[in-house]
Length: 211
Image (cartoon, rainbow, N blue to C red):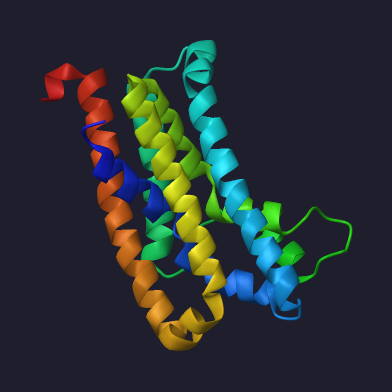
């Protein structure tokens, strides 16, 4: 996979575990350290499972719905662009968490699913944007080496999620609210550029005359 570096940066920027730190700290403040470690591990495994499943089922989904990779690039690029706009304003994107979902997280009923899976693993980390990127990769990746590279990238991103969440408290203290906002805006800028690349690449394939 020749564009592996771009793919890896795209995937990590979209997952963006730094943006999840405030929510993670809010959910786990009163949880004992051993339990917090278990939740962090489960959230990271959930990220890899969701990304890998999206990739492995990607070609089948595209074929079943009759969707071209170019069309998905444009649609996925628009989703990612919307996410980047929220990040540039240092806000949680509605694509990852709606206000209603945020309210449910802040006031849990005790009857919901494991927070490591929902909302941490999905959709806060592995959300619509990252799933779109994995499906796009599935549609254009060929050969065993390419498939291994994509799944390796997903595994590394999941591992980085685990490292980030394990270090959430010291990272939060070191960066503070201002530092977190700056980091989020920087990742949002990178994400916006990646989204434009996806959209223009897809449009160039659909409308060759544009080039």
